[in-house]
Structure formats: structure tokens, C-alpha cells
Amino acid sequence: MTTIPEYDIARSAACPLDPAPAMRARQEEGPLTRVRLWDGTMAWLVTSHAEHRAVLAHPRVSVEPARGLPRLSAVEAAAMEAMAAREDGEGGISFILMDDPEHARLRRMVTGAFTVRRVEAMRPATQRIADDLVDAMLAGPKPVDLVEAFSLPLPSLVISNLLGVPYDDHEFFQANSRTIINRDSSAEVRGQAQYALGAYLYTLLGEKVDKPGDDLLSGLAERIAAGELSQQEATQMGVLMLFAGHETTANMITLGTLALLRQPDQADALRKGDDPQVAAAVEELLRYLTITHGGLRRVALEDIEIGGQVIRAGEGILAVNEVANRDPAVFPDPDRLDVGRNARSHVTFGYGVHQCLGQSLARMELQVAYPTLLRRIPSLALAAEVEQIPFKHDGFVYGAYELPVTW
Ligand code: HEM
View 1 (cartoon, rainbow, N blue to C red):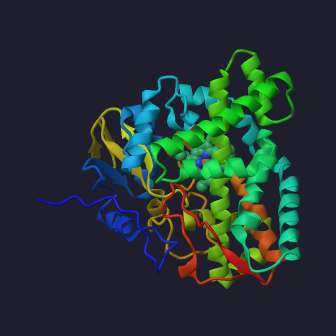
View 2: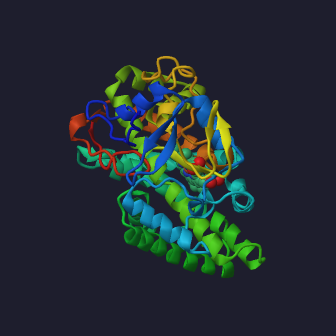
View 3: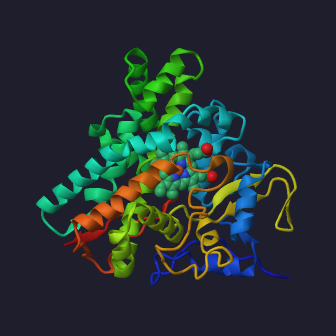
């Protein structure tokens, strides 16, 4: 009898920017393999690029916790149970955990704010934010923690402006977002964080119903006033966009800077690149780093066939971005960071109907962030050994808590 290996996303300390060795081993065994989760249940691990996309595009897979998504730890299982038990969805995080048609109904209400054209209009303001942050870094003492000084405030300021959330409250929403995204947050603590953000946005939305401005939450407030959306639904959408909108991009800025500072030839290519070259480099960094790690969760609603393998109704699925992005059939020499390659088909933003709503925004922010840092601070360097950097092994999103830099 063959033993089923355990689900294991521990990265090796020697290569913290590479996928976990256990995930690589599963990928070598085949595109779909079974793993045993912490509670003895099984899930399918999808590790090749083609099958990864096929499963996420399949109309008969679900993302709803109540349908039996794989649970990756005891604390998380309790959090999901609590979420699934609430019929009104209170405490949930909106359409990222809903199937169509509800998912599509809600998502459609906000897609207009994230089109390439709308995002491009935000580029000059984003550039100003990046320049101001670099000015402050250069005027202050060194070394400095890049997360605190640059990676976190940049996307936080951008998403606050877009949503119409006062940036003065950033410590409150950053701390609560961190709690939501931490795998080890207990159901109670995560619930409190979601509740706190929810209560805050609920009040803000109420104010915008009375006095709308020119921002995304005001757009939702108008829909509340028109009876198209409940204040509760709008609140959950606000929570989703607020936390998805800055933690992810902040981690990409931090890890991308780390990767570039460790490979000066790649940093140099990006520093000297024109706009299309910078855009290509950003795609490669998204592929290489794949901060959305550990597997996007799904559950089969009926028996489906993926890559010649039948997944039975009710079985859990983990579509593992970080190894699909290192599939040698699609990305030759996949473990090499090569900012000159065409990495556009990476799956860091997911695939199918739930593909990241904010991807154009994230791309634009990263296209501003890396060249601004590298061009304005040409001598930028790490001020710590890689072994000393505290990586976010506990998060749904990979990153680093701190990155000391100097110049
Ligand atoms: C580099 C930064 C980012 C990465 C790597 C990323 C990654 C992802 C991934 C993988 C998903 C799909 C989840 C799934 O299929 O289960 C997703 C969904 C989502 N992302 Fe992002 N994201 C980023 C930035 C942003 C930003 C800036 C926003 C701004 C609001 C955002 C908002 C969302 C939303 C609302 C969803 C849910 C989409 C849906 O369910 O239809 N993300 N993101």
C-alpha cells in the first residue's frame, strides 16, 4: 500500500524564495497527487500549469466554505466553520468565497474601478507617493526597514485613496488585515479583526450614503441608496478590497526588492529598462516569487476529470500557484529569475472567474515601485543576511515582516 504524503509548505531556509521542497517533490510525481491534511482528510494537489488552469476554470468547482473546502489547520477549520454557519454571510469576506451567480453579481459592481484605463489614471499619483516615500527614506537615518518605510505605505495609500478610506486610520486597518491573513489566527481573533474592519467600513459607508464623494465606497453607497445592495454586502466587499489591496502588493514589493538586491545583474536590467521591459520584469517577479502560495482552495461539486484523473464530488482541491509557476514545460529553467523572459502566463493572480480583481492596480504599483527604488537609490543594499530576515511562513500570502536596507 502506498502511503499518502502529508501536506507540507515549509520552505528550505537555504532557498526561502523557492517553493517548499515537499511541493516540488509532489510536482515531480505528476500533475495531480493526493496529500493528507492535518486532520487526516485527503485533498488533491494540482501542481502543473495546464491542470492548474483547467481546475480553476472548471464550472463545477466551488470556493464556498460550506461546500467543504480543504482546511489547512485546526484554527482555520474553526474559522471556516464559524463562517459557514452564518447564513447571512456576516463576518465573511464577500465574493472571493462565493460561487456564481452571486459572485458575479457582486464582482460586477466594482470591476469598473479596476480597468486598465482607470488604473493608468492613478499612475501619476502613485509615482508621487513613491517619490515622497523615497524622499523621507533618504532624509532619515539608515538602515531602515523597507516594509515600514515603503512597501506597506505605498499600496496602503493607493487603496485608501481609491476606496475613500482615510489614510489616518492606516494603523488600524493594517493591523487587522495582518490578523485576517495570518494562518495561525484563531477563529475568535480572526473574527474580531473582520468584525472590527466591518464595523469601521459599515459606519463609513453610512456616512457616504448621506454625503457621497468621488471614490469606490461612495459608488457602493449609491447602490445601497438605490436598493441594489445591502449595507452588509457592501461592507464585506469593502473589507475584501481593503485587505486584499495592500498586504499582497506590499509583500511583492518587499520580496521583489530582496530578490533584485541579491541578483545585481537583474536589478541593473530593470533599472535601465524602458517601460515595456519594466512591465516584463514585474511579470517575472510575480512568477518567480508567487506570494500566493500553499494552494488556492476549491472543492468538486460533482465528479470531474482533470488531466485524465477523476476528482470525485466533495473532494478538496489545492491548486498550487508556486509550483505551477515553476513548471518547466511552460517556463524553461524555471528556478532562474530572468527579468528578460516572457512570464505573462504565470498564475500568481489565479485563473478563471475568481482571477484577481486588482491585478491591473497591483501591476501598475509594482511598475512604479521597483524602478523608483532602484533608480533613485542606486546604491540600495540589504542591511541583513538573508538568514536573519523574518519570512511570513504563517500567512496565506508569503512575504517578510521586515527587510532592513541601507544605501
Ligand atoms: C501582487 C498583488 C496581488 C496578488 C498576488 C493577488 C492575488 C490574488 C489571487 C491569487 C486571487 C484569486 C483567489 C482565488 O482564486 O481563490 C485574488 C483575488 C482577488 N484579489 Fe488579488 N492579488 C493582488 C493584489 C490585489 C489588489 C491590489 C486588489 C485590490 C482591491 C486585489 C483584490 C482582489 C479581489 C477583490 C479578489 C477576489 C476576486 C474574485 O473572487 O472574483 N488583489 N488575488
